[in-house]
Length: 325
Ligand code: UT7
Image (cartoon, rainbow, N blue to C red; front, side):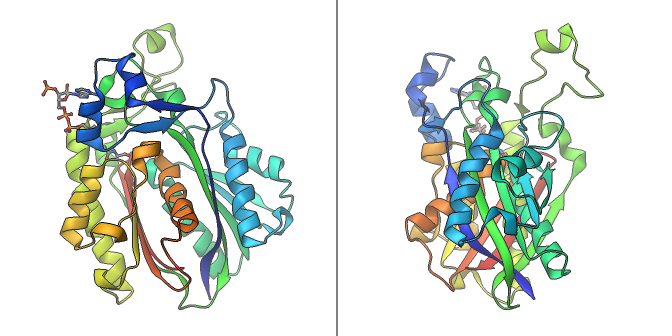
């Protein structure tokens, strides 16, 4: 027995923030952002918006796409670094809003790899016979965690949600191979210092802007390319395929230059690479399900096609999954 994505959905706030809007906030230009990242727009939520409300819309679309009722769900997993509250989990808020009364729910904190980590947990539970249907979500309101005085980070990220319904299937369908990895020694490349036990909530924490995301972009870039290439090789080889067999490559949407460097190294280029970061920016855990759901809407893959997903983010965490759709 295996597990398969049987429904996909996505949602993003209506409000767009363009590079030209950012030019008015920080010392940057549309030209720099497009050339260095490929990003043109990102979506932003209203202050105080609930992450779980955005996740709810994406989840309802995924359930409708799958023809599955919320009460049929055994598990709800939400990959997020921008939860509704510190406690309880955003997954529990989502469960209540969906009326998924028969599920257990938890958040998976793996930054931009959160969706793939969650997908792997769902797959393991289904293979172990402990669940039949799972909802796997990546949802982020990163605009609430950005320092709008730091031009090196605030231009990169955006808000959005993507959801997948995962169900039992035969062994040669669905998730064919998955490999996850992390390296906590490199935690400081991307982090939010507080509030937490090391840096509790104090006036100093606020005045030093320690509640906002910090990233060493250049160093992160190098790790992103090598680590994502490495893990893509692992899953494709493990499943007994080559990169030529792929119908579509859906990489984490952080930077167009990272995606094209990986694509060139793996020999996957042109229409076989899915990119929507120009319109959404980097939506962290939401990036892959949001892209996969859009790819489905655009008819970029068909039933039976091989699709490769790869993620990379804070932790450091990274991973890849090969799917037969
Ligand atoms: O999703 C989690 C994983 N995240 C990633 O994978 C992100 C990886 N990193 C990146 O995507 C890129 O490193 C960035 C887009 C963040 C930065 O691009 P870069 O080509 O690595 O630029 P840089 O950090 O080396 O900075 C080059 C210059 C610097 O100026 P000087 O020192 O050369 O004078 C920066 O101060 O660009 C400057 N700069 C900017 N200029 C205009 C940095 N941000 C901006 C900006 N507008 N927004």
